[in-house]
Length: 99
Image (tube, rainbow, N blue to C red):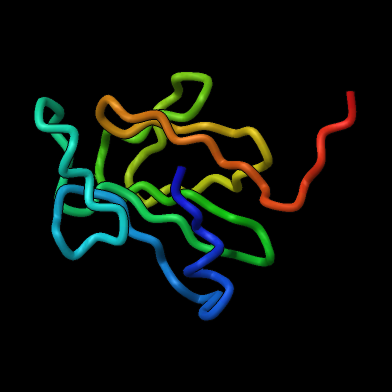
């Protein structure tokens, strides 16, 4: 679990970068076997919505569709994306599921 809100709470214009570079907010040092770029993607807030933006090829959405470089997709509660061998799931902190 990685709490993105800690970045956005103090600076909503922040880009949370994901990749192999040590300069990335989410430094994917654990995924040694995948071809991950120094900066593969970033998550940001656009118009009040969390958004994933691909910088390089290799960002797959939950439906296995690849997000093309320089393309973005709004993230909704429960949406997932994969970079390398790591699956990320976007969970809204304050949403309560009704059963």
